[in-house]
Image (cartoon, rainbow, N blue to C red; front, side, top):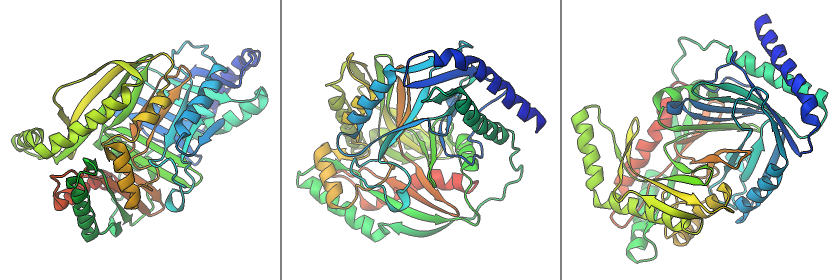
Length: 461
């Protein structure tokens, strides 16, 4: 305990040394970044405060935010443009000091629901429809550096220091907690499903009928299941389990006002570095097999399956069509490759391009989301079908979340393989792409495969 308090005092003293230089600056948001070799971030720690967490285990890249120095919110069809405009105005006056020359940039988190008009009620209450969150304390872990950024919107060094000390002490205490070497494995039971299996089969049959009538080419309905555990779910243990089981996925978790949400998604919506952008096109799914030969044959089956190739081609076309107004030098492979995960493999195509100078990440995301991978194609027809069939109120499931830094760079991930946690209960979400060739029972089985990602991890939470 004494050592932890000593580490806190040392970091706060270094922050206090930087504050006089910072308050001389004219700005609206102020940040100080310091190296903290005393700390290491590899999993979400067990925090009491609200958090924002982003993890890419294979890249050894983790972000953890605590507290809120500032929040920007928006709702409705223009929500991402509005957030972009607010963020760009703030970014012009965002002052960062980096006395240790870490080269890391002050960063905010962002997230938004699938439906721009979703009221975010019932299980989703506590999470906004769309927002950008500027954490008071941000811990960044890269392959060779760990740094902490303190941010605040006022020029009262004492107030900033006292608040930061409180959050920092909680962080350091939680990072030093030893995990249970023999955790009790949870016994999970399903307590409900919406729609039911029979209702899903009927819904998919109706969708294929609509597609054959020419009203649309693809639509992506979803299912929700409720799960009960023998003990309260621990978000920290859940994220550690996902880190171990799915190191190639993007991990995201947030707790706000009592709502705890987690995802382990294989899909980047968009990544921006300077004027270069990249996107994942994912569509078409098949299971994995323990035997390498069987697994390879399953992959070949997926690559040659006409239904999956057609579904995937619609996703690629939709993304390229959305990016054309923002980008030049767009490129995408002619044929998809396999993206292999722990229990699933998908058809995947990487798409890259160069942004026009006056385009922001969120403005591109506004036109890009929802992609045909989570909504359907053509977009307007698919969204109309989902609305008519009460399938578009999904909260943050199939929305997106990620981070934005003070240069305007950032990443957004499509929120798939998701769970909402509430004590001993959790709600899980999964969808399937329906085309004219779809078999309703096969699409039901695909959602069960996708539920498996989170169900396996929840057993260890």
